[in-house]
Image (cartoon, rainbow, N blue to C red; front, side):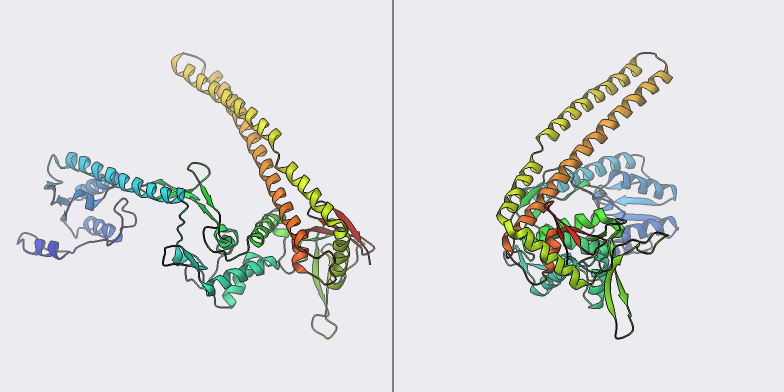
Amino acid sequence: MDYYKKYIQNNDEWEYVDVYADEGITGTSTKSRKRFNEMIADALAGKIDLIITKSVSRFARNTVDTLVNIRKLKDAGVECFFEEQGIWTFDSTGELMITMLSSIAQEEARNISENVTWGHRKRFEDGKIMLAYKRFLGYDRGEDGKPVINPEEAEIVRQIYRWFIEGKTPFMICKELEALGIKTPGEKEKWGRSTVISILSNEKYKGDALLQKSFTVDFLTKKTKKNEGEVPQYYVEGSHPAIINPKEWDYVQAELARRKIIGKAYSGTSVFSSRLVCADCGDFFGQKVWHSTDAYRKEIWRCNHKFDGDKQCSTPHLVVEQIQALFLQAYNELMRDRSQVIADCGVMRDALLDTTDIQKQIAKVDEEMEITAALVAAAVKENATLPQSQEEYNEKYAALEERFLEQKDKRAALEAKIAERKARAHELDLFTYALAESDLIVSEWDEQLWLTLIEKGTVLPEGSISFLFKNGTEILAAM
């Protein structure tokens, strides 16, 4: 900067304006180069007649950006001089030389980008993980370059998981964190729902690492895309110390999926939210408060639509102690033959994971899609080489396109079916693990058992509850 300032001031024919420099910012795109864009704006505003740059690659490494800006400046009567190459843009050969040199600079940028990408992927293959430590809650970089647990931040992560398991929604968790004055991983005071969900769903908190979740699509724009099979992914188990117990993490993933299916109907006010159903209307039970401002205050659970319309639901209201007692009754009934229940779950799990028939259907659909794609290609080629009615061609093309899209939808539905079966098998794994680790007889309320084992409880008119466990077993409990 000092060199160019003196270089300009020592020339009596020039009047020094400024040195425009972007420190530590990539030259592959001009979008993020604040000072570069200020220089162009000042030049177009008539404040600059001549721009002196060390070389073409310092101006921009993107051929399009280089030429667009030089032509824009040229039209405004502003010349550029590239000292290293001795190029003046008002010279007749200037643009040809600039095109050649900026193309070389762009190719150099591509090579650098590809080398960096190769380095990242080699590290992924070797199972070496990378974390954005400044924006990742719970871990610091250790002396050996590997993640080590930050005790203070790790406790915040564990609290987020505890709140979620207790039934709180990500939005409620945000408010809890803000009330405690806890800052986000990016050091912001206001938490976002997506940040909480990201923490709840990141496998790194259970000590594993899924590498290459996204990849760079364009080395010039640095645009990234979620990896959906375009490039290899690597899953490393036990790559670093876990903050969250793996089984607890797995449970949270199952609960995230369950709440997504329930949608807006889910309420995070209690562990009973969205789990108790009215036998009359099928709607959820909600928490109500009687005598909220006096000594007779009482919390009850009642069908949300009990008094809607002309017909009232006949299901009664229940207090928390009743629900808990009925659950313990159903649980103890289930555990009478725990070994058989676990064995049955194993059979169900194996059956769910056997997707041979569905894979055969997918293979058949793939064949049909290939045939349709070939017919489309043939139709396009025929239309390009032989004279024919364009109306008939468009009809034929539209019919083939519709056929292809139908097959594509069919394939997506089959893949979704496999994903659903895998998720169900995973739920059974968590269910059997909870059964195996729990006492045969439980006499005191256990919130974790309720959350892990129960799919839903249907409240009947007489006040009994039919509990549906996650393995499909249904047990009626009555007072």
